[in-house]
Image (cartoon, rainbow, N blue to C red; front, side, top):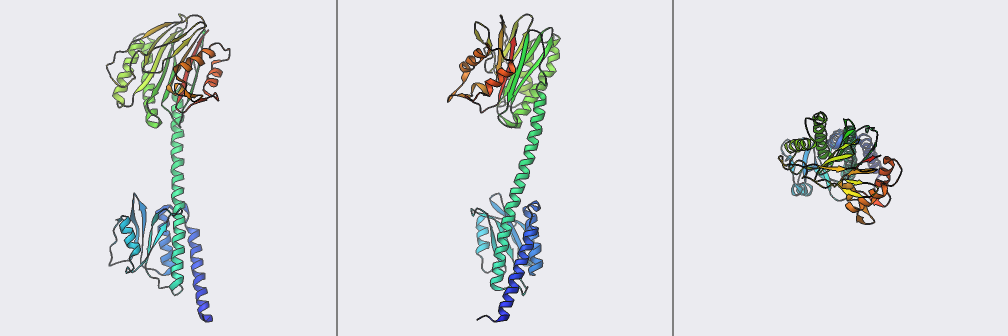
Amino acid sequence: MPTPQDLAQELTQERFALSSLLEFARTLTPDLGPEGIIRSVLRTVMGKSLISEAFAYLGEDGGYRLVALAGFPHKTLPSIIDQQGFDELLENRTAPCTAVPLVAADGTGYLGMLGLGPSINPRLSGDSEATYIGSLAALTSIALTNAWLFEREKERERLESELRLARDIQQSLLPQKLPEISGAEFAALTQPSEWIGGDYYDVIELGEGRVLLAIADVVGKGITAALTMANLQAALRALVALLREGHLTLVDVVKELNRLMCESTSPERFITAAFGVLDVPHRTLESVVCGHPNPIITSEMSTTVVETTGIPLGIIPTFSYQARTSVLNGRNLLVFYTDGLSEAVDGGRPLGESGIQALVGKASHRSETLDVLLGALVESKHISIEDDVTVLAVRTL
């Protein structure tokens, strides 16, 4: 039967262990980071428990890395161990220390390991020391899990901030205001499927009622596609002055864009595009379509598809593109779009070119503004869109 002295000593040991663990819990904050938490644990436990030897491993890249070491003057621990070495350390009963695993919160694996030498603190001995070390390992595991989650959240917030900035920069490259020309109405809509996309459109006045229309889709998504799009925008804007002054034709501009894209992008990073010079007073559209979904022209009597006249930009630097000229009669609706719209699902089936022609044909007979018509086209509850979508439309009056 335990004596009063034994009970008092046991109570003292439990109080010490509890107060020490509470101190750990207060200091192990997620902002310390995983290695900071390990250092804090060892610093506190060695001071409180009068332990002169300790080490710690943390999981990293399928193995475990030594992140802290104190004492062990006659023993060298490897800086990296694999799972077998980890298990051997845990199972080694002859080592002059107690090795305890840091178990993941979901119980699926190990976060790392603490190795603690014997304590010379009289208030920790026998069962109380084993319980204390087990509780310490559990607290450390929780703190490490929180720290990793904290770091992951900080990284997510950092990436979101960068993507938000990239999206704002990308949006600033698109026209902030569309031209106002007598006899024509312009509207555009772009809807990236992710933070940033690879679609691009532009509407640039050339003078005397002439307007350059451009739409493009960089293969792929994300930042790489957005950077390629920015290169295309910069190159096109640089060539517009020569087109405006008559030093270059539309075909010349497209050929030069193709050469520049071949030089600045890898072969797999090609760009489908469609360009047009709309002459509003003379009611003509000169167009060059580079492997892009075919633009559509509707009138009161018919629907015309502007066929492709060349391959996508960025594949063959010397490709010879050709232009086609369409004559506009009466009230027309011109629609340029990216393949995100043609690949949209309507009633369980891809919309396709025929579906878009039907939608554009219906829209051409409606009296709402183009902005309203485009919004209704993309935001229809019957159509599911999963890719970047950009639509550029012109209505001649």
